[in-house]
Length: 325
Image 1 (cartoon, rainbow, N blue to C red):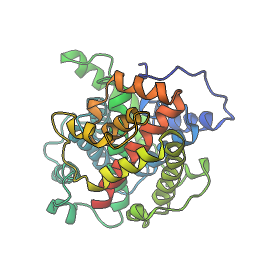
Image 2: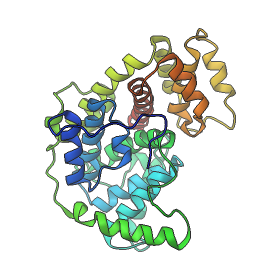
Image 3: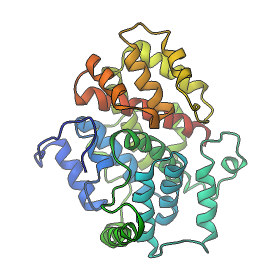
């Protein structure tokens, strides 16, 4: 599957950071999945995204199928069909079952994950997991609120070759069978942290502190995304986006983009394409169009700028959600 808006890259050397990250992804995730490889133009962000996913979804405390339930439910909440399919099949691989109807714990986990964009929900105040498990479940939710935005903009509707009917069911079964060995392989927490140097944990990510591995992963991820975003996103656009996310309550931004146009009117004409892309990526990623990406790229050319912009805005919104869960 091709990745929209970015140029295909040659195979990295095994000694490069990208090569090392991709080797880990193949070994522990099971394949070089596009939600990771879409970051390849920024190797440090690729490494950060991998370790944030690896230390929560793959290696965190709690049942793997429960964390896969969070991934699939958050993806459904964000209307990201690609990630819904990907993690529904992972859930099937983890349990060996197509449906989890009788598992009350997974139903409770799904209800909690579905409430993660509702700050006042009682489910967020009384989560269905232990304090020891909390960093892994919260981290999985935050990561998927991030990656759903990236995938919605850059990938298609499903990772499966056949996307409807019986063909999709067969594809789902085969994919679940393929990923089962990687899912069942034991993952030692913290094994990915060597990929990037240490970084301070921002205060809004303090929920990760009980797990040194998850705290270390998110600190590194946030640090490298901040560097990439600073390079790709003009200061006035970052300030505008920060303000919009600070006031956001998790609700959908609405059926039109009038709110976006009203917000970017505060910017000069040169920065408005960046402002539109930033605000819609953070708050309405399904409204990002090829024209918006083209307009941004005329102002800020190159894959590094595009991925830097998208990753910064996506993680800002995900971190906001993390602050209330």
